[in-house]
Length: 108
Image (cartoon, rainbow, N blue to C red; front, side, top):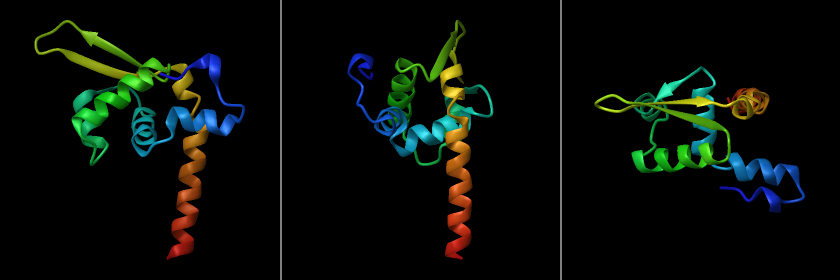
């Protein structure tokens, strides 16, 4: 969890502290479409291990980007949804997608 009382002076660095790795950005991307169960995320974020997905989801939940709902069923059902704070990152992801598309065009 990020120590909110000791954030870096640079806002870009603060953002990178929250989503500065590949997996978190891809999890955000996939949750932008709506609520997903753990297994759905595991399939949609190709290449991620269960351990890494769990750790990233916990970190994102602690930092207020993702909410986790557990349903009292057997087997347990857990769903993940972006919070309002998580949804506020949509313009960032949209800009990244646009930049990536333009970069791919330049490389072809």
